[in-house]
Image (cartoon, rainbow, N blue to C red):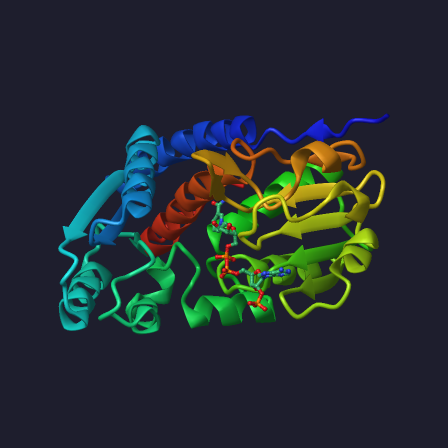
Length: 289
Ligand code: NDP
């Protein structure tokens, strides 16, 4: 029985972060300041607190300035909008990230729409979604861009390949489908209303699972040799598992990302990359290719 190669997202992300640290030093030498990322956390959600802490640490390790804003859980929408306005106007801040989810009294869409699209390093602003959809330069959400980097590193050209994206969220599934379309894949977007999902997935040379259901994708859904990217983060009995049933899929696929250690580390590396790009654009400094 064949066994898939493991796509080591952790190692790839470390390499990317080292390269970003070099380019960050070059930027600081030329611009006279470090790239700056502002991260806003409202409330005490433990998972969000962990994400914010690792983003802060990654920023500092890359030589970037990290501005953390922790607001109480009862912060009003008006107060949060005021902070976003201050950060939009602050020249030391190149990227703004408001950690989601937000407490119920705050409309997430209103907050995302208030962020300057050219500081929207999460790529969630409708202007950036529109730029991605129409082929203009903008910010692309970190997780799907990280998935694309892993796919291109593994496969080279993706042109003509059949790709199935399971999930159609604004933060993963939809931008993933747009990126794969741009790479000239033939893209199918599957979701909770898809009929006969196993049959749809069986056609795919590339499978990206972004659902949030532990071990949903099974080995007998996979075309032999396919490349499988598992975005899912699910906690089962205190253990992290993906949306892909790793044991059965790894027997059929050509390559697969593990959970943890696959897509997860790429998300933060791409956040740093987007912040570096934002800093160059905002300072009018050219970025080395
Ligand atoms: P959402 O809940 O926003 O979207 C889930 C999608 O899955 C929806 O489009 C939904 O369909 C679809 N879906 C649900 N059930 C099924 C089913 N039975 N069959 C087929 N499709 C189904 O999730 P996100 O996109 O935000 O995240 C997806 C997963 O990725 C989560 O586990 C999340 O934790 C993880 N994640 C990981 C990141 C990382 O850094 N590695 C970053 C972001 C997310 P419908 O639209 O019809 O409801």
